[in-house]
Image (tube, rainbow, N blue to C red):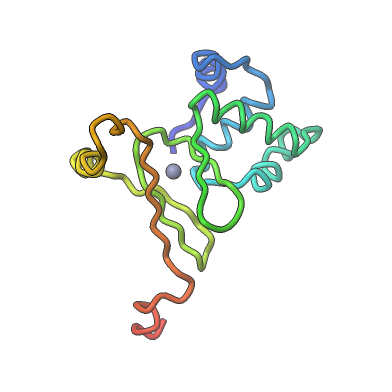
Length: 146
Ligand SMILES: [Zn+2]
């Protein structure tokens, strides 16, 4: 895993128009280094180990700032709380309901073009949100006896 130094974190925040605060830096660094699409609660638990005084409300405020500045995407799956993703490339998410894990699925540029071509020309800059769900008891797993 690439180590992310403190300076590049605060530089990225500033470049995106955000004031760099210790709270924002820690929240953003956890998101960049873990890539597990954590919820705000999960982030709060992790961030607390480094900034014991931080509140859940502050974590939410940091996430809101990161999302509105475009550094982080908010991922909403059909059930459950929002998750957060620092991967800004167009990609899909695979949600494994049995483990609760959410992982990135890269989308080839040609496929993105094909998807956009489904829309009227004036609407092709729409954001693509594509989620795959692996059900808890999928027919394939049952057939395999898993
Ligand atoms: Zn993602």
